[in-house]
Image (cartoon, rainbow over all chains, first blue to last red; front, top):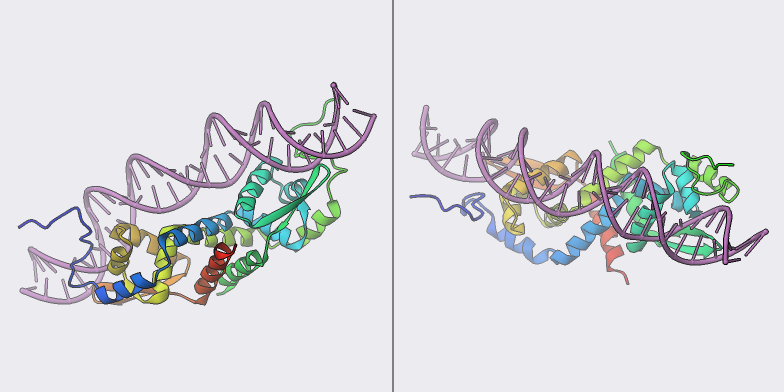
Amino acid sequence: MEQERDQDLCCAVTQVHPDAVERVRGLLPRDETLYDLAELFKIFGDSTRVKILYALLESELCVCDIAKLMDVSQSAVSHQLRVLKASKLVKFRREGKTIFYSLADDHVVSILSQGMEHIEEE
Amino acid sequence: MEQERDQDLCCAVTQVHPDAVERVRGLLPRDETLYDLAELFKIFGDSTRVKILYALLESELCVCDIAKLMDVSQSAVSHQLRVLKASKLVKFRREGKTIFYSLADDHVVSILSQGMEHIEEE
DNA sequence: ATAATATATGAACAGTTATTCATACGATAA
DNA sequence: TTATCGTATGAATAACTGTTCATATATTAT
């Protein structure tokens, strides 16, 4: 007799650990939450943005400063600041024609620190 | 007279804040470090991987368990576990044909927690 | 040996994303 | 007003990434 295809016959039913699976299923955050969490980390997953965040960690800076500092075009910086703004990771204030950006809150610092600890070890 | 193009004339030299830029430049981590950090966060920036990590946070699980739990193909899970393994975020042990995965260290938990705090606020 | 099962992996395709370029917007100064 | 400067943004392109499919590997059982 043919094995039934299509469905997830990744392994025989007998071998799996349904108790553990069920228990964990009940403990997992909602899919939407996990999706949002991934979206947040995606922001940190770009070296340009990480560098911007590290720079702002030291000092409030205008778009132009950031571009000079990083040797990246003003446009690229602006685009990335837009992303960071949308995720509420940075805030800004206007002073004439200049706009100064700074970190929005301490979670940014914590997240960066934890990540740094991981890559620095070993 | 023509303005010189090509270079980053994102803003006139007089308007920028060279003191702040220079100070921050000296304080920034090395480019390579920032790149590695972004690479790490990139791993967390995918909902499938985040979900796997959250599942492993509760219990050691085999590939098949994870696939069933998440309703994702075994192949997709395997591919992602490969990524997580490469970044030393998960470890594994073999038991016959089955391979059990678990979290590699506590940084994973810290990073996830900090991210979760950020999205839960407001 | 062969078969069956759990996992891994290469190739291909679709979807996403970061940069560049050109241009627009907004504020200040003349 | 017009000009200038700092910033923002839409479109286009190139590079990257996650899934699927097919298949390979590794372990155990017969």
